Length: 182
Ligand SMILES: O=P(O)(O)OC[C@H]1O[C@H](OP(=O)(O)OP(=O)(O)O)[C@H](O)[C@@H]1O
Ligand SMILES: Nc1ncnc2[nH]cnc12
Image 1: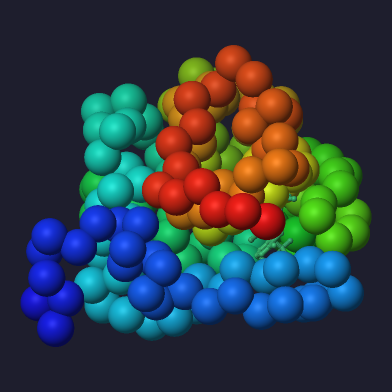
Image 2: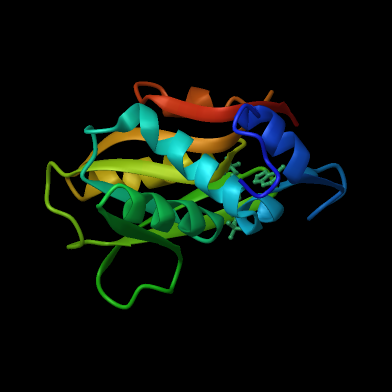
């Protein structure tokens, strides 16, 4: 297994591979960089497997949130034999969209989804790398619900404590692989 013992916990694996970058992208923000985990073959597989395991049999499609969420969602959709719902930043989707503006830890943004991408009632598993204020995932929940689909659950690799992202997702099942101090 490429030098990684199978007994290593996901938390230890994330501690070993991820990087913390102080004052990025703004002073005062402690940025949790998961790109080294994406780059590691065992790391990527472990993250994806552990994100989808609690939701097995409970979702029809995996939603990926641009940009880092795409990495996890595409791999998870492939691994579970499902498709991926593409949720993009504003202005990138070519057909009619639902749009939702939100704030996140270091600014404001806007997400969009194609209006006709999924049928009403479709059970959607949302995956992203980091849950901070919950602005991004909360926005995705609203977009998915606008299409008439149903949020089956939310999976994130890192949940930053102290920012109450979970509080914005009341009524939804949130599974995080590691809770970290922000
Ligand atoms: O809980 P929140 O406060 O919303 O923060 C979490 C979001 O912030 C990051 O995305 P970012 O918008 O920086 O975009 P990127 O994936 O394109 O780097 C991260 O990938 C999450 O989607
Ligand atoms: N502190 C942080 N590190 C990485 N991604 C983030 N998204 C929002 N806050 C973040």
